[in-house]
Amino acid sequence: MEHRKLELLTDFYEITMANGYLVNGMADTIAYFDLFFRKIPDEGGFAIFAGLDQLIDYLQNLHFTSEDIKFLRGKNMFDPRFIDYMEHLQFSCDVWSVPEGMPIFPQEPVLTVRGPVIQAQFIETMALLCINHQSLIATKANRICRAAKGRKVMEFGSRRAQGFDGAVLGARAAYIGGCVGTACTVCEQDFGIPALGTMAHSWIQLFDDELAAFRAYAKEYPENCTLLVDTYNTLKSGVPNAIRAFQEEIVPRGYRPGAIRIDSGDIAYLSRKARKVLDEAGFPDCSIVASNSLDEYLIREMLEQGAQVDLFGVGERLITSSSDPVFGGVYKLAAVEDKGRIVPKIKLSENVGKITTPGFKEVWRLYENETGKAIADVVTLHDEVISSEEPYVLFDPEFTWKSKTVSDFTAKPIRQLIFEGGKLVYSRPDVHQIRTFCQQQVETLWDEVKRFENPHTYYVDLSKSLWEEKQLMLAKYKR
Ligand SMILES: Nc1ncnc2c1ncn2[C@@H]1O[C@H](COP(=O)(O)OP(=O)(O)OP(=O)(O)O)[C@@H](O)[C@H]1O
Ligand SMILES: O=P(O)(O)OC[C@H]1O[C@H](OP(=O)(O)OP(=O)(O)O)[C@H](O)[C@@H]1O
Ligand SMILES: O=C(O)c1cccnc1
Image (cartoon, rainbow, N blue to C red; front, side, top):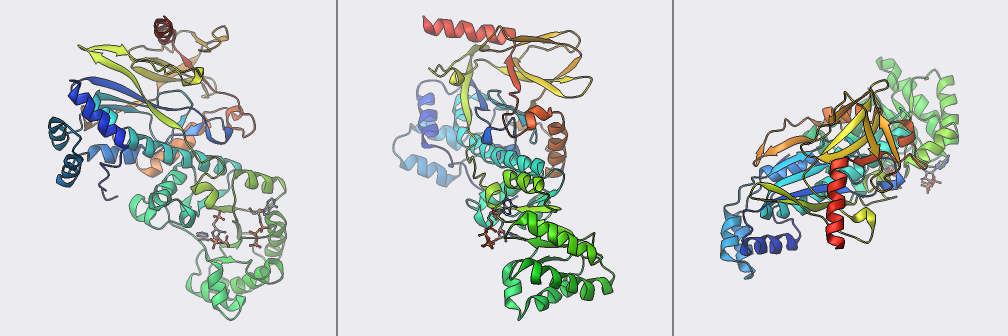
C-alpha cells in the first residue's frame, strides 16, 4: 500500500514528553516499553494479534518533513535542540513482537520497543492504534468464523465501517481472522485478499420484474452466479425465479448455479425451505448465502435451529466489533538502561491487575508434546531459557500456592526480532501466510479456551526469577 504521512498522528503529549526528555538530558537514555492488553473482547478466551505490518510501514518510514518541522517550531513551545533532533530523526530502536495471526492473552508483552526514550515514547500512539484496531477485528472475525463451523464467512462491512482505514484494514484483519474474502475491492488490489460479493436489492428493483433481473444477471455472470431472493417474497417468488433463471440461463451454457442469498426474515426457516426446493429442482450443489446483521451469536443460534446456510456475509457487527468495540492494548515503560545495565521500572496501582511487570522480558509458550496443544504462556526475564528437557513449575502470580508441574512439553519463545537498531530484520509474511498461521495456531488451543461461554482462563504466568524481581520492587515502593 502507498505510504501515507502519519508522523504527527500521535498524541500531543508524546511530543511534549519527548521534548522534555531531551531538555532533561535524557536524549540518549535507552528505554523499554511493553505493549500488552488487559481484557479479551466479548469475554472470550483469547485474542488474535494483528496490525504489525502497518506498524512496520510506519516505523520504516518515520521521518519529519519540512512542514512537520515548521509546524512544531510554530508551536513556540519546544526547545530548538528538540526541533533539530526531530528534523534529523532516524528510527533506531529494536522491536520484538509476536507475529500477526498469533493467539494472545492478557498481561503478556506481545511487543517490546527498546531504544532512545524520545523515539520509543513517540511511537506509542501509532503502535497502539495499529495493534488495537486490527487485533480487535481479527479476534471478532475469528469468533464469527468459529461459530460458522467450517462454513465460509465473507466480510461485507465497508459501508458501515468507521472511516476508510476502518474498512480497508478492518477487512485485512477479518481475513487474517478467517474470513474467505471481502466485498472491499481495494483489498484485493492492495493485499491480494479475494474481492467477492453478490448483488443488491437495487439490481432487482431496477428491472420490470424479478425474473428479468435474475435472467439478465445470469446471462452476464453465468459462472458462480448468486441471486438475491428476498426482494419481494423469498419462497413464493425469489427461489422459484432463481431456479428458472438457473435452468434457462446457466445450465444450457454448461455452468452450474452458484448460490442464492437470503437477507431478511427467519433465515433458519427460509434456508431450510429453500434448500428443499433447490434440491428438488436438481440443484443440491447450489449454495445458500445468509446475511443481515449477523454475528457469532446469531450464526450459532441459526445453525442450532438447523439453518441450511453454506456461506455467511457479515458486515456491521464484524467491522465495528459492535458487541465489544474496544481492544484495550496499553504501552507501558518497563525498564531503562543505566550505563548498559537494565534497570526495571514498575507502575503501581490499587488494582492488582494494573500493576505492570517490570524489566526486559521474553514470552514463552509451552506446547504439550503428546497433543501439540498450548498449556500456558510464561513471561520470563529476557535472558532466561525454559528448557523443554526438564519439568517446569507453573504458578499463579497472584495466588502463588496454586501451582502445577508440567513435563513432556516443548517451550518456544513466541516473539521475534522485527527491528534491530532501526533496521528491519524481519521477513514479512503476506496476508495469506498470516491467515494460515492463525488457523494453525488457533488449532493448538484447547476447546475449553475457545468456547464462548465462560471459557477456561489460559495461564499467563511469570517465571520465578521475574516474579521475585517484581516482588522486590513492590516491597521497595511499599517502604
Ligand atoms: N432464525 C433466526 N434466529 C435468530 N435470529 C434470526 C433468525 N433469522 C433472522 N435472524 C436475525 O434477526 C434479525 C432481524 O431480522 P428481520 O429479517 O426480522 O429484520 P429486518 O432486517 O428488519 O428484515 P426486513 O429487511 O424484512 O425488514 C437479524 O439480525 C437477523 O439476522
Ligand atoms: O447487515 P450486515 O452484517 O452489515 O451485512 C451487510 C448488509 O449490507 C447490505 O444491506 P444494505 O446496507 O443495503 O441495507 P439493508 O440492511 O436494508 O439490507 C446487505 O444486504 C447486508 O444486509
Ligand atoms: O456482495 C454483497 O452481497 C454485499 C456487499 C456488501 C454489503 N452487503 C452485501
